Image 1 (cartoon, rainbow over the protein chains, first blue to last red):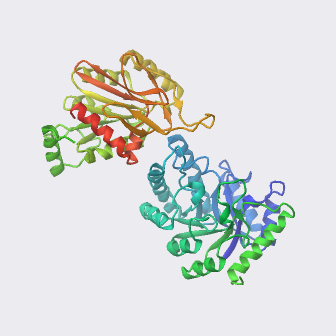
Image 2 (spheres, each protein chain N blue to C red):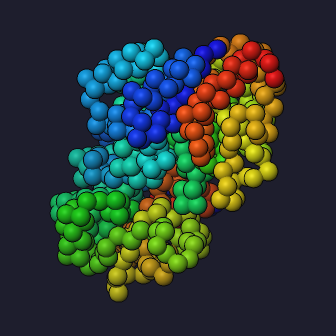
Image 3 (cartoon, rainbow over the protein chains, first blue to last red):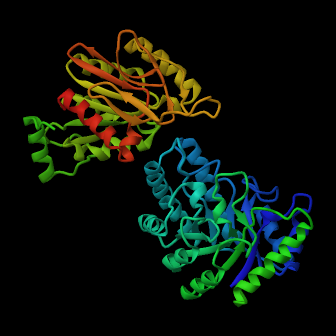
Length: 279
Length: 234
């Protein structure tokens, strides 16, 4: 398995090059690029600028593990407003277009957002339809769409079997699950999700979770690897069981208050321990 | 639901021999009069989900429906008594005159407006048209869900006719101010559904889209549509 971390972890005042150097020095193999998160990768970024972005990644000795986006929350494909859905298709379409330019074959989307206003049944039907349409574009680009399980935040597809049914309804080999082992909170167990989805897992996001916090208060439910309640030996065993040998991508919500570069080294070392089984 | 002879004949002929939908085909020769005609306004339908909703639920309600474009309408109006128009964002004067003539001669129209999702210039023109042709005042769109509100929304439109029921709102509505019209639906103290007898027929206008709820499988929305079609003798 290979290690990656998101470019959204790069502090704004560091800049891209310094951030990429740090990621490499910390021992990562790749970087996850977040469309919309940083000035160097926006919807307005041209193909030429994307190629230049790849050059910088490769100059740092890294590759692009996948292309994610921060835009789905404001422009969900499950929106009632056709104009908002059009925006969603635009940015997800752009992810699909740039993935081959960045020499990667996977993108992440947060597919569907249930709110008090937009109910579950609508979100489900609209999301299945939308992802089916995007799957055709993904197939042409030879890219896989990984729908992330943001269970509690999306209020959508809470159980692994429901997610399985969703993928069945989409019914495309170009659509799978970008499995986040920290997002399951107290609604289940990451190792069971891994086992159920197996070959449909496009990428894996790593973070730990403090289950007792839930999402009710002001404190983050997420924490750094090995500080929370995930059963990491079980997660590792499940990944082995389903023969997952792809990217493990660190996604830290909270940053260190001091010595912020240290978080990159610590996270990289923790993933090494997970991969090697020294737990 | 009561099975009228008309429905029985239509269902009997259509179920055995014909697909449920004849999108954009010319009027089939020998086809029994359809239960109702769904008018596809093409680009002037602002809510494609709504069109899908009306198209998808007719069979389950025990009705037969056919979908046609505006070009085929004059011919169709001679053969049906009920026209449903989903998600209308823009209608021209000729179409409104055709519909008025149809209603005057005993037809029923269920017109669902998608104007809450329309551009301001289109909205303004349509408001003028509706006032002049139907004596119906359309108020500016209202966003039902706003973080600025001091209270939490109850997400339902209350339908009063032909049966009382609740159906989820669709976030935005165009309210009506229509003294000569009967109020048939309301949300947050706004009138969002009206009906009026005209000549030998009637027109029902919805300012809150119902079609997306039909599309999403809302049982109460489907039952309400069934009741409207039954009342119209579709």
